[in-house]
Length: 324
Ligand code: UDP
Image (tube, rainbow, N blue to C red; front, side, top):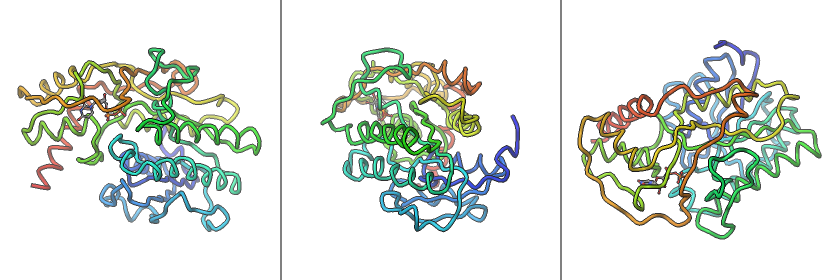
């Protein structure tokens, strides 16, 4: 793995105070980049950047309202991560979510066009919706409810992909899309609401682990450091080799019940569970085909679920301890 391969770059990371942003910013710094973070702290936390605060430039900015021509700094690469990503958070203010996805990426594309920066946009496996095709490759167009409770996120992210493709076709912007499948790790908020954080927090507190539905639905979980390595490989890819959205995720597929078993092995405890209704439009299965990322980026996830979950559980246990 090369170090300093971002020396000379000035990276803008929107959503840099969020879970993945906090990882990405650290890795960019480690590889020699100058880093600016914009985050309106809607779901991001300054705490995630506290340890590296003096090494970055941080502004509390909302990408829905940034005007490209008013931006004084000059960036060579933009990573657009700003958007709530956990179902309870993105559904809390759906109009905000849609605007952040759609107006936010429009503004970042205008900035990339004006500054000649390349743009890396965080898309999502949610664009496949509740898939009829399994596992999901990039050529699958998805099965998304346009008017459901998840649509603000799913359709917002789909529209953002469309804008990226059209800014590339019509305005020559170097915009690259990566589709993130369920990712977990340190810096997640204890109240994030996603399955891994909820399960780790419940296990650490000794409260019942909440299972939505019967727990037979599947997901594929990628550890944060693996995902960041994939994003940075895409950022370094010569432009002519990018030919469309790339799935980034770990193809290991687990039912939600199996996740409880893995957590039991890690904690050495028998965990009690509590069943809750399955949320509306909850996808029944999800697993990425990552052949494209392997071929184009030479990328594969390295961290197995048990190892990543052990580190993540330790992080949550410490977070819960610090709040007690
Ligand atoms: N889930 C669960 N318990 C929780 C949170 C989520 O059983 O406390 C389930 C949820 O219904 C879904 C899966 O776990 O089937 C993954 O949910 P998450 O919110 O992490 O992300 P999603 O992939 O649905 O966006």
